[in-house]
Length: 325
Image (cartoon, rainbow, N blue to C red):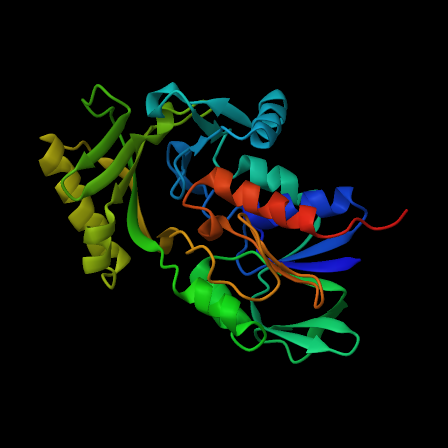
């Protein structure tokens, strides 16, 4: 079957890999220019060269046997490494958190910059209506929605209202993230700082495995501060949050070589309530309607971890019958 996968984060990519191995032909539609969703890395050119910031997920835990095997394959390919500073189970992508997702995406037809605004069931299959496009993409024998809950809800409203309600009831927490590169090393002994006032997380990004370049920090506000200041401009957020960081740590910050902020409206996913999805199969990991060949996967069905996205994507693919050889 030719299958449309909406979203090229880890859930969509993991689902696509399993579907391809089962004989199907997935095509991914991603609204952004990059892939990986919250496994994001931003690279900035400065006078000293290029500096990278993992401004989304900071690391991933690796526990499930299937995910262990995948991450081990990434490690063998030089795409992942353990990061002890964040914990015994913490791993990061190399040279950035998005590296594994980019490698996965290279094996597929990924339509970047394609925002899907509606899913429509036509007699010949599923059609995708795209923003700024008069024609639809399709037909597809099956359709999979692999985006954050807040985006899945509106897409599913007209075609699966019960699933839509489940998604809309599963709220994500926001996060303001500051990315700062400095001309000198900060006098901070540890590479990871957790839960210091409004600072939910701060890390010396340049100390992660496989990184190079100047002293670089990622500073993330906690959910309460981010929600209270969600409509700030990026310039306001970067100045306020960097000031809070300096005050909290008692630092006289050196010259900044690069400074920017990113607002994640849907940073940390919620966890869907069990037993509230009535259509099709409500498995622990994903949703699948075999009659209409419609599926949903994402970390929000399991919990806010990179590994949850993988489990949901592969779990959904396992519900879809393999293509007969």
